[in-house]
Length: 362
Length: 261
Image (cartoon, rainbow over all chains, first blue to last red; front, side, top):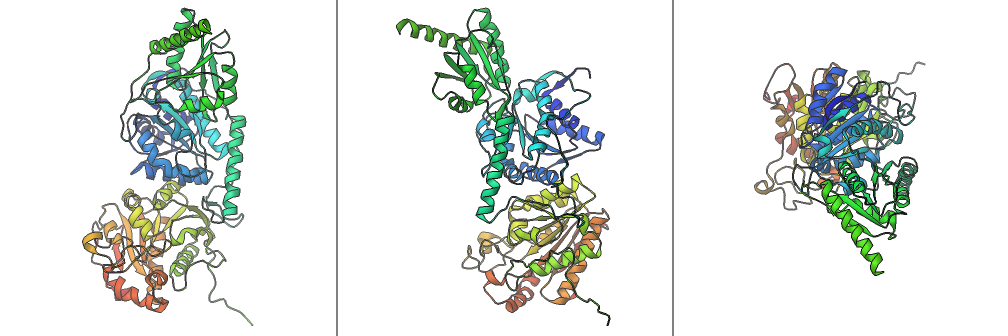
């Protein structure tokens, strides 16, 4: 299929349709309105259904109902709306249903602003709603990767019977880039019929009940442990990450995800031209986080620089990965302000200068 | 000798005892819903939506597939199921705290979109499961644990008449109020439920039947007194009858007199 210039939000919508999703329930919020608008236009063309919900609370409960009937379903929102969806997401995780949720992050807290941010990392990776559950979280750095990950997200959701979140910042939603959709796509996980779905019962099986209520504590504990075993499988099998410039010696390892990693890769090129040894590590799955892969990549580095559009959230997972073995520096902007490649290069140079000074005096 | 079965458990009702208190009419309402599903031949393609409240375990009492919903969100969950599978018969079973307080946005918009689902709205004028707190439907002066001196309408407002409120929406719908505190009322309630499910099966419109119910435990009275309390206090404030039909009325007609029920 030929490449087509598409806005990130539209590519995300088209990717969902290519993945066989015929149902969208959502509520308008900037900067992701182009996703529901695209679905409202496209879904009727493919025999699907678009519903504008009365709130994100309702939308999250509509996708809960639709997923329980065994159909592929998807919603999108931005930070304050995702907060309202946490009720439904918790029930969906507890009831073990597959849904795909796209969060095009804007700056917070509260109403915050409408410009790009990465300030929902904690919410996405550490639970978000109430209860002991995890989302599988995918963080694209380009429009093409957003389109690819959204399609994979449906397979992963079905395979694990778990909500999958695609976490993008405002840049991913709003920028235009060439996108290519494969004509024939093979699911990234083996898929089986949804025998658990509530679709009416004529007596040839016990009734199917979609439920997260377990009043007997022993039964609920077994349910919690079953969920944990599922999350352990994700940790074992689903880690995705990428490294750039690690084939040559480097003093500083930059760690960044999403479009911030794109900015850092531009800085990397400039630093290489200037003869500065730096490399870039990019988590693609934020849960499961690539702890072992990051630790291995940092082994030959003398320092690590974490770059985020927040006051520092992913940096906590970087600390867990490195267990104090390397000094960790932080460069962040907030409120919708962006980080330039020059700012990244400047910080890397400063760290390198410090490292050399350290060598001279040591 | 030929035996004729004159009374049996409806097939759509699971063969298990319920947890409901003595004198509570949830069980009667469950049975009426199950009888209607059986008689219309809908049970095998029915998916029920259970609320949060006394009927939270409704999914154990029907022999149909079920979804358990978050508090107040049953109409949103029902919307998701019905839009995903329009061939299914979808009903939400909700209490008055669930539907008229925390879930007011969901029920109004579900009705206004004209979702082709059926809502069984059980109004007993109090929060039962949490222990007798004031509901949006608690009557003026009625004592509850969070209005120990009785509902003060100058602070808490007046009880919400859900059927009348939903009947003001322009979207075609079937909206009725019934009661089950006497056998005659229960027969009428069943007819209302039958109409509601028939409208859904025909793909006509959204349907809601409000059913006045008892709560002897939290009202603090024996079951017989509770049924009398429904007649004496609830029916005058919550008149029985059909408030809206899909055949073209925009506004609620005058409710039918209680005696007609």
